[in-house]
Image (cartoon, rainbow, N blue to C red):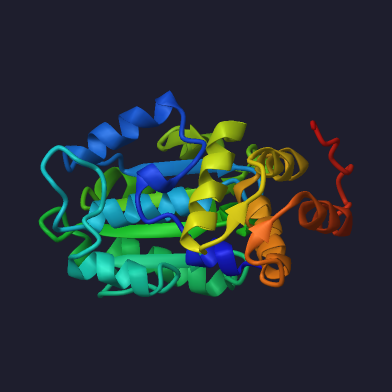
Length: 266
């Protein structure tokens, strides 16, 4: 049930829930075209770390950003590539997306060899971004191979996504060279606003906004789980005039009772 999550994948920072005040330093550096050499984004499963990483990469490579803004323009060639498929590398090492859950050790070492040895990594080259998703799935011995490019390849930016449950995976020598940002659990108001926006786009009406609060609390305010549950509700609402009511939400939440059922507040 990932259809809604994929369809409404954040395209700008303003679309992402759970970004706290500490993220302002990231936005300021991106707006000045002076990103940190490396980022470490940390969040629970479904908490948005990959979304933040992708938008960060897009912002760095975007050629049409407004002056003083970190938000991607969504119109330039780089942004169009991200819109087509943010999980696919493009250009000659301009953007490299690596899913570490499917990565063979030998392929990772090839990436690192290229990063350390290719001439296009010189400071005069165009900006390059390497995004390592689920980095905690990589073999630990490779971490030290990132130290040299982080210090010497000034045109390259490295983004690492780590699950909160594995936040101690990073070796200190590497972690100290990264700007570490923990993606916060969103406030219930942010989650409700996100689901309300999706319902509006899907031409669906929620009988009572507190139903969305119930979904949010049931899912632990996890954006991915909330959208998955909302997607199930929309399927049932198709036979109810596209109206999400208490009966529909109750049915779906009982179907997803890995978590305790909610207590309705009416």
